[in-house]
Structure formats: C-alpha cells, structure tokens
Length: 248
Ligand SMILES: Nc1ncnc2c1ncn2[C@@H]1O[C@H](COP(=O)(O)OP(=O)(O)O)[C@@H](O)[C@H]1O
Ligand SMILES: [Mg+2]
Image (tube, rainbow, N blue to C red):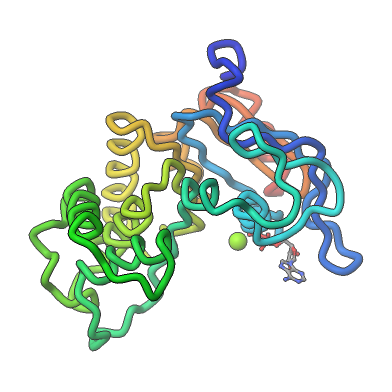
C-alpha cells in the first residue's frame, strides 16, 4: 500500500485501534488507518457499517472510547485545535436547498471564511478574494452573484466544495454526496474531486455506495463493516472478495 512510498511527514491522520460506541452499541471496532497527503479514498460499506461515524471521528465530532487519533502529528484528545480543524473540510450533502433561499453563491462560499475566522468578524478584502479563488477552483465564479437556490444540484455541490476550500481545507470529507445527484452529475463531481486531488494535492475522502464509481476514481478503497474489511488498491482482487463478504 501507500506506506512504502510515503514518509511519515505525509501522514495527515492516523487512527490507532480506534473504537467508537453509542450507548452499548459498538459502531467502530479497533480501526487502524493512516491517511496520507494526496490520498483519494473511497469508503464503502453497508448501511449502518460505521462510515459516517468514521468521518465524524476524523472531525472530532464523536469521541472514541478507545484508541488514539493523531492529526498532523499531534494526538487529539477532546477538542481539536482550530488550526487543525479547518484543514479538514466537511462538505455537506445538498439536500433540497430551498429555491427561494436568499443567499448568493458568493455569500455561501464566504461563510467558509467566517467559519475559519469566527463569526462577528467583518469580512475583509482577502476573504472575498479567497472565496473567489475557491469558486474559480470549482469553475463556478461566473455564478458568484446568483442565488444558490437557482443552481442545479451538481452546481450547488460545487459551491459547497468551494466553501470548504475557502476555509483553506487540505482534506475534503464527503458523505454520500451522490445520493442527491444523478449519474452524470455524480461523475461530474468525481471529475472535479479528481482535478482538485491531482492538480492541487487536496486529499479526498468520500463515502459512496456506488462501488464502481469509487473504483474508477479513487486510488484507495476502504471497505468497512464496523471493522476494516479491506484497505488498498481498487484493482486488488481481494476487494471483490471483501465486497461480497460485507454486502451479502
Ligand atoms: N448518535 C447515535 N446514537 C446511537 N446510535 C447511532 C448514532 N449514530 C449512529 N448510530 C448507529 O451506529 C451505527 C453506524 O452508523 P453510521 O456511522 O451512521 O453508519 P453508516 O454511515 O455506515 O450508515 C448504526 O447502527 C447507527 O444506527
Ligand atoms: Mg452514513
């Protein structure tokens, strides 16, 4: 796997024997993972297998009961230090943004800047510039002045990616963003993620249920079912075995 070609300094996140429980129910059990800078990871697994919990653990939104979480070389105990938090950008799923929602595209992206700097601070010229640069990265700068509700689902998803990039995220976490999009739009967003990964070295971790799509774009697939059932190359034939095992 990637370990042979990456040095320790490339490791963004490291989970060591992480277990997460809700009440007395174990959602994740002894998870060991290294996330390297530049990874383009597809996470798959049946419903309730702990995919969202895994992303939440990376964002510090759930606390493991056992194990260690190391981000950028620093062990995280409870609160994530702010300077680390915004390096990891969560991209919300678009779920029926109201057609009449008054925010303009540029406002939504500038919210990424507020999130980073703290509400109550005035937006500066630099913030506006960063927001515009992020919109350019996702090829949506032409729609900066349009209401977000007027865009297609795929375009809205691009704007939400720009919001995370405006906060200067180095890692993008996406949770089943494809559920709200048709196949063509899904491919379009995967192409964008591929571009951000390849050209801008943005690390991508995307949860998806379409394994063929994940295989086509990702350079690493993780199958989970509470435990890690597979972690490796999409072309590895062990992946097929793992998929059969966890989905049937
Ligand atoms: N806040 C919660 N309280 C109790 N159980 C939860 C909570 N969140 C998730 N779970 C349970 O943990 C398991 C894993 O959930 P989740 O990580 O959302 O799975 P996935 O994203 O793979 O569908 C599921 O059985 C789910 O019902
Ligand atoms: Mg989920």
